[in-house]
Length: 210
Ligand SMILES: CC(C)(COP(=O)(O)OP(=O)(O)OC[C@H]1O[C@@H](n2cnc3c(N)ncnc32)[C@H](O)[C@@H]1OP(=O)(O)O)[C@@H](O)C(=O)NCCC(=O)NCCS
Image 1 (cartoon, rainbow, N blue to C red):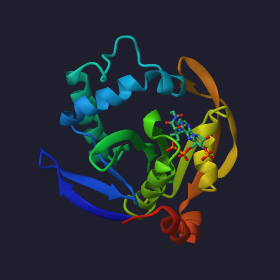
Image 2 (image 1 turned 180 degrees about the vertical axis):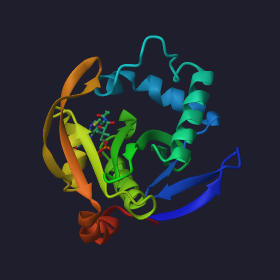
Image 3 (image 1 turned 90 degrees about the horizontal axis):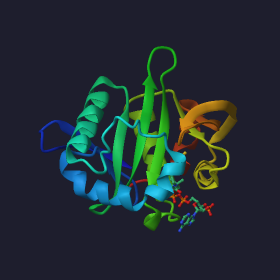
């Protein structure tokens, strides 16, 4: 995994993160066509695992303006240190997103990882690879102490991601998050920087950068 800054169209410094195959970078307004295609193609694959979009909110997969607002809100979140959200690319193709959300500083120093991938690219280990890239960034660049991944227990594909990375399960939080309109129980997985320090070389060797 290598970390280096580049510059987006707005000239704001934008991070690019690299794994062996994946590249992560913040999405920008010109990504609308690619993002919209992937999201619309994958609606039935993604909707069961995501919060409902409020009826009053325009759909960023169908509205260029709504997508541009989503990008600028995410830029602000990154600037304020609230969240770090990335498009997941193979070569120049956008195939998903991985995020560090709900960043809390103070005595907690934590963030929550979320992810999704285009079904046409599922099952090739791209998301576990991207999670290792995010862990490297979160622990060694933005200096968080703890990362969580919260998963609906029947989402076996997502549980396979944390199992592959041997991320610790801390138990099930009841009715923890709204997913597709229901308060769903979530298994809460976590890794701290101390565990990362012990495991980083092995994880980076297995999944990491170019
Ligand atoms: C969960 C998810 C992000 C995993 O991403 P991924 O890059 O496919 O991860 P992996 O390659 O490690 O595959 C995970 C599991 O998907 C399943 N899988 C394998 N090939 C697949 C394919 N072609 N199509 C669908 N699922 C497949 C397998 O169960 C695999 O586990 P295994 O490797 O132990 O057999 C992806 O399935 C997804 O986006 N799902 C819908 C949204 C979602 O659930 N997000 C997570 C919410 S917590």
